[in-house]
Length: 291
Image (cartoon, rainbow, N blue to C red; front, side, top):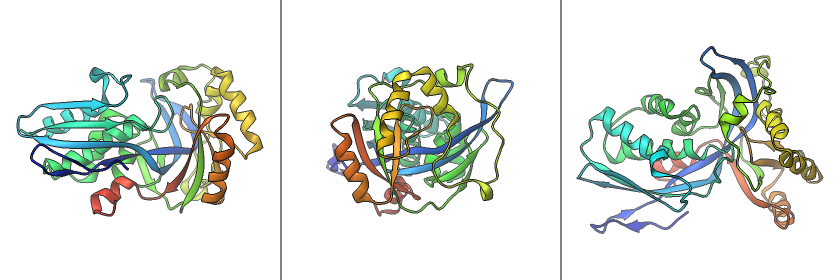
């Protein structure tokens, strides 16, 4: 976690976490006439992700700085999230958002969606908007299908476009994330003719709470042969899975110690990180004063 900084008036500004997520499994169950896809997936929130410093100003301007110059101001979902909340709530104040990206772009870990959710949640408090989580999630859905799960801050079974959520208790888990040297555009996967779009729906009571098949991951391997090679190589360390539409591959381990050991062995071959799976988001902890 980044250290707190001081605003212009000397007030301490604590970082707001924007955690990453894994799709432990993902099934595409249909395609709508408008081109959007129905899916079922199991979201696991992680104890690691991006971080944002957010300071409020009286002038009404919303500005942003970022440590990654690949994220253009005109396309930044953080700015769109802040302006959406400002407009809907009639807020006269503005804000500056300092985004520190740790999650790679095109990684399938929900980085942009999580950043947007953190902006909504943080500014809802800092601007005293008073919106409930359900209303914030509805705003978030206008920005992206994955935003609501980060607003609610609970690992969840998701259906529909990914916005119909049922919280699940997965317990602490341990993973190693493997980052290929490329990102994958979500739209490329969903436009791919070979994407499986007719998986049979399952009920939560019958759904597995362990990693499993990812219809998007299979498509990503076909589109990116290098990803398929990485998946094959990682089998020496366990069963690899693709998160979301890729490109991140993850391995699950029984303990933090074994995950750290595997990460240490793999770091000479890939960019890797050992992380923890959590049921409650670090953002929720920040709201409650526990993080």
